[in-house]
Length: 211
Image 1: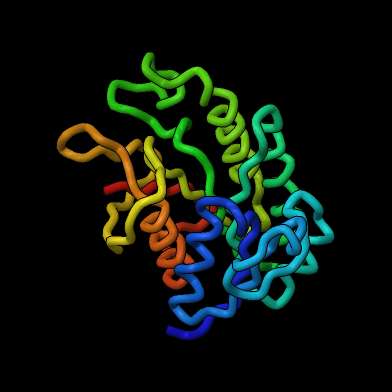
Image 2 (image 1 turned 180 degrees about the vertical axis):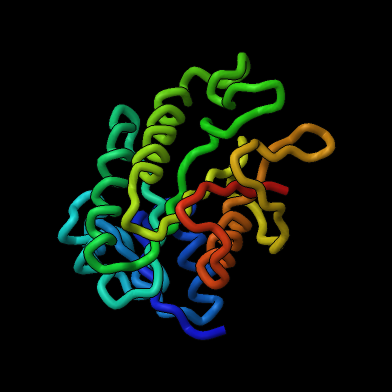
C-alpha cells in the first residue's frame, strides 16, 4: 500500500484517536488536528493546531494531502456546529481538491418498516438533538457538488472495544445482526474508515458499517 498523506480533524476524540492509531499503524503520514496541541499530549502522528469550522484552516491543513478525515463532535447544546463545520470543510476542500471522509451519525439510517432510526419509539430522547444535527450534516454533504466526499454513519451502538478487523458494509439502512443488535467498536469503525481511504468505494454517498 502506498503511503498516504492524511489529515484528521477531531483527532482527540474517541473515534479520532482510533483513526490516528490505525492510520499510523498502517504506515501513513498523518497530521492530527486539534484546537490546542498543548492540551493533547500523546497523540500519534504530527499534531497541529486548527479548527475544522474555519475554512482557511481547512485549506491550509488539506493542501497537498490525499484525504481529510473528520470525526469532530460538538459539546452538548452546540449540536448545530456539526452543520457549520461540514459546510466549512466542504468549502475548504473545494479549493484544494482533497477527498473528505466524514464520520456522522446513525439517526438518519432507515429501519425496516419505513422511517429512520431517530424516529423509532425506543430512540433515547437525550440523543435526539445530536441525531437531528447529524441528519442536517448529511444534507449539507448531499447539497455539495464540488467535493469527493463520503459520509460514514455508524451503527446504533458505537463504543470503545477491540479491533477485530471485521465489519459488514451497508448504505442507507441500519445494519443489524441475527439477534437484532446494531453495533461496532470504535476500533473497527476506524478500520472501515482507513479501508475506505485506501480503496475508495463510496463517492458523494453515505455508507454504514456494523458487525
